Length: 230
Image 1: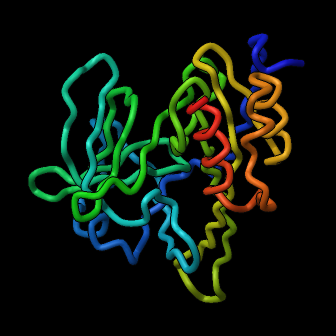
Image 2: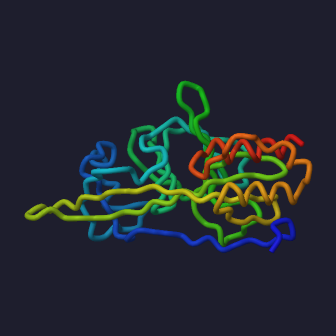
């Protein structure tokens, strides 16, 4: 089916166990004792004590300066934040540097290091509707927008005699293209080329001559950037 005809695919969300976890090595979380008794007035039951031994549940891994754009609110908020990909929440540090999570719907988060923008993330994709829940990295915007879905897979093991569960977090990605009214997942960079050429045959002459890689995010972004410049 043709992308420009308005077809979109359902996003399959991969989520880990929903039981509350306390990362015993996370200083910000460990120091905020009240955070684990109530979260916005909702009791958190049966916390599970964990240690992350590989990877991270968050994007970025550490709290980072961010501009947060709340849905239907034109003013951006500046906080230190990171995205909990598993629970689909934005965590931030309040004025007392206690960790909280935002309970307002968020359109976009822009992260900065040394005043340089290092990443833009949105919850969902324009044109995909409520079926496309989850956090996406925004790679390109324009006539065609390119998003990268963040997928966290967690494996757990409890060492013999330990009360702490060890977690390994593996991050994978899937790529999605959108025209503002519909979207679809694109599994191979060759498929992306074909979609762009079909949308605008002039793209055929602009494809880079070098071999493009499915594993290089820069190659995916370059193709969409070229298309949007035509």
